Structure formats: structure tokens, C-alpha cells
Length: 291
Image 1 (tube, rainbow, N blue to C red):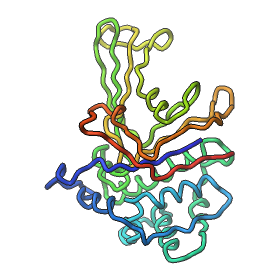
Image 2: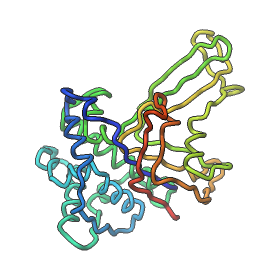
Image 3: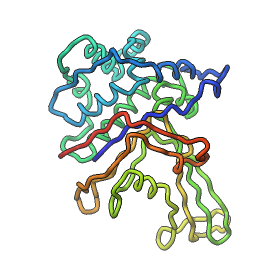
Image 4: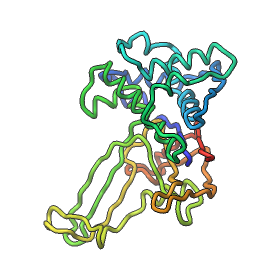
């Protein structure tokens, strides 16, 4: 299983002139996202959970999180009496900045009881746990409510994006459009998929809903044949892509190599993008579970 993190700043300062989020100022977010932190060197982690080590080190070099946590801003404002993932992660990063030897994340792992060991989805599941935990802490401390408000947190502005799903009934041609929030993309690599570009092309390819998978058309009031198209409406600033190697139906793992670029052009996969306004994401980390 591979997890890729790709960095691309989709917000421009002029786009938000005079506009402030209820929790985090957009201009401030942009300033910490583009800030160069060459003085920071994280000397690694050690413990028995290799997947957790890999994910935490990737998050440690996710620029917006890095610049926020290295200033110790969260712990100064956190009023949580119980254990806090963000406080612990901030402490780990500050200790990493001070020392020259690997550190143990055991104080984080010892507070996580629901993650299994030796499972194929461990790295991705731990990443989701870490991001969701940081998001819930930010929302709670800011007293936010609602999906739009949640996007104004540091985590929301970093990892949240949107997918656009369009289904067209082949009988009456009625169109149904849905916008779904996403914090990562999981793409299939079975068959003849050999590159990340091919996997993303399949992810956004039109799909015919027919047979036992027919679409219930609200206009026809019946199950009808339909065409479904999925595109990325708005990609997050840190785009996380997971290659689905584990095949649950036959308990096997796809071990073939999948090529990926250092710079990913997301323009063909975006709903409102064109070659005149290309959307590029730079590779900032990758993890691979060798088990």
C-alpha cells in the first residue's frame, strides 16, 4: 500500500482580499505555507510500528502543520484536560528540533487503542486517524459548527477538498449532481494500471450504471440505466492519494510497481480547470508498506 502526499497552494492572496475565516486568516495560512523552514531537521522516530513512524514523519514535514506546531502555538491555547493528539505531536516536533537523535512516539501510540497491527491498511488508517484527531481538536477549541466552518481550521484548509459527482439518466436525461467532501483519494491499480496518471484517469472515467447497479431516477420514479462521472471539484492544498493494493475479495496484495511523477498535473482531473490555468501539485512525501 502506498500513500502519496502532494503539495499545491490552490489559494491566491488576491482571491481572499479582505476576507477572514472564523478560525484562521487565509493570508496568514498562505504565509506559513510558503515559508521556508530549512533550519528544521527532524531526526526520525523509532518504535515497533513502522507504519506510524512513516506517517508521523510525513506529517512532520507537511509545511503548514510544521510551521504552526514549531511555534508552540497550539499548546499555548489548548484548554483540554484530557490527552490531546495535537499537544503530543507538537511536543514531539519541538523535541525533534532540539535534539540530534531519533525519538519515540510511544506517548502517541499508547493512547490509540482501536488500530490493529499487521493489517494492510494500517498506514492509511493511521493517517486518517491522525488528521481526523487534529481536525476534531481544532474544531472543539474554536467552538465551530457546520461543514463550512470546519474548513476554516488549519487542518481543514490543509487537507479538505471536494469531489463532484454527476449522474445522468439515460432514459430521461435528468442530471443529478453531488459535491462530496474528501480528505484523500483512494485509487484502484488492478488490471493494466502501471502509473499514477493511469490510476487517476480510471478514477475520473465515466461509469455506466446498469444491471444490478442501475440508478434510481427521481424523475422517472424507477431504476434506470445511467452514466456516472466523478471529477475533482477542488483539490486540497495537501492532496493525499492512496493506491489500493489490498484486494479484499481474494485476500491478496498487488505488489507490482506503480510509477508516479514528482510534479503531478491535476488539470485533466479537475472540473473547472483548463490548460490556460494548470493545476500542479509537488510531491512532498510517500510511504510504502513493505509487509
